[in-house]
Length: 243
Image (tube, rainbow, N blue to C red; front, side, top):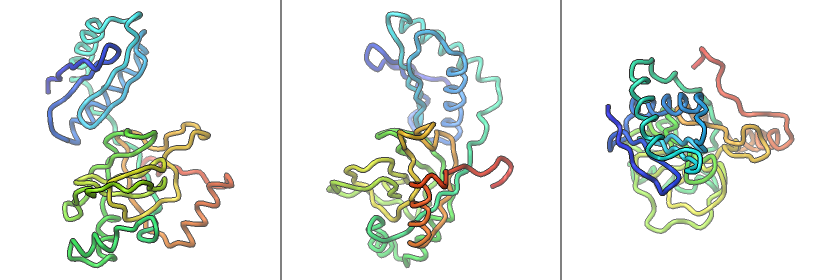
């Protein structure tokens, strides 16, 4: 796969791989971003892997765009002979389906000709890939949504959706990181916070991670939220080797 280089203003360069969403390409890009990060190239200010590209921010007073492009091309060629990026961490995320936050569960189930219980089982039975973090700090874009649950976004976005809301938009799933407006359809809520500025690191998930949603009832979700707020609990991925 040969990348295309695109300028993003005068302080960033985009290395783009194809025009479609592909897990193998995404893994290659995440591995490339990690290799570039490890180099610590002087003048590089930011590295952001996305679905099918890597954005590389740079300081033009320290690093010329043409020099950076040549360096990225050489690193990409070198990475072509290395092993693919390792499998991402697995997170089992508690999810309270339905309720005030999961307000679209019943309507979506009806539209799909299934019961809410069947929809929950289908959604929770899939393994999702974090393709990228973006839009808002810690907002996780997830691939792997079962095709039967694909659904267009709302024609008119709602003005306020809380942090932790579990959404569906087109062929993607998501975990809201901060409260804000959204046109996605929401079927549940997790007490986990994918973004917490007081935590280190503040962003819980990263590109390449895997997520499975674990249904919980309201009392358990409330207890988890209370333990998190009190510092008695910290979200963690599954230990390596489990899954």
